[in-house]
Length: 420
Ligand code: SF4
Image (cartoon, rainbow, N blue to C red; front, side, top):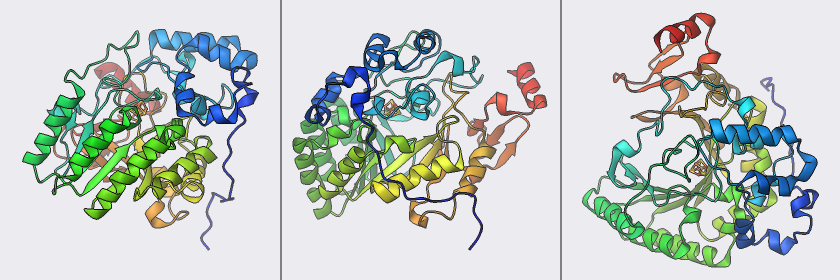
């Protein structure tokens, strides 16, 4: 057997006891499992956060969050109790990306960081429908989520405005937007694969989502439908509601009859997020007839950018929760993300070190979502200037990714200081 540095030990999933938190002390099991209770008790501001965690977290931490919200935050605060309960304290990987603090940010953004860094809106063929790849589209049905992640790549559009970021808006009525999307897909039979996303599809009222999916399934050109929802991790209670599961079963049986692959894509970044409730929700979706539940995480320093963290997460997903580890994306070049981003060479090295542990089909690919181009495996860069941290991925100079400047050698940092 080849010697490998990571040691696999099967670990059972754990739902931390929410009653340890002062604000949830009297919450019953029935309330906790109720999606409406979870939504009604989301933490949206510092006052609510204090009321839940009490004096378990130091006062200096709250001041740090407040400073972050005023100076850096690109996303508003929104944490369902389920997700807050998986945070063990202030020094915690999930806290680092769901509740960012000013003292952890590097104050300067990369000079080439931008809102909508992937230029998805520039590639809209109708409002909310990004046609970037030859055979696939991304349909953004909604611009909200049940939880907001600090590093969100769609920070330009998703969520309410923050002191730093006035958000773009979807202007069409949802029905009109969906009509235009369906009309485009009818006219464009070369598109066979639709990622139905947002925001998070858990925030589309189920009857509307079901009606849209059924109309997609009426199009003979559509062969794959993927539903994007981090709520499976942040609010699994949503996907366990009988009305939602009954609707999903209707959609899945229509998809099966028409030989269309229907899958759910979720977004877990750390093994602590994969709890027994998450596993139950994934099982319920599979039992309803969804063909696959897959994970698309984001690689982030301080959260999961080590071999052990990635593999622990993958084994929790694959071995315990029936969720296929599928992709880890490099963190995109949005403003104020330098402290999370990893340089390309680290991502390449992580891809190498995680090989050989999981079944091949469950070994995730680490990818870079290259602006204007789309995702590429991290070893596909055509050229890579390690000194300046510039990787180029095609003949088009717009197709470039830039390493975080603090990760560069001194000469590279000097070059950026002189040329930015
Ligand atoms: S769930 Fe997805 S779309 Fe919503 S804030 Fe998080 S990363 Fe952004």
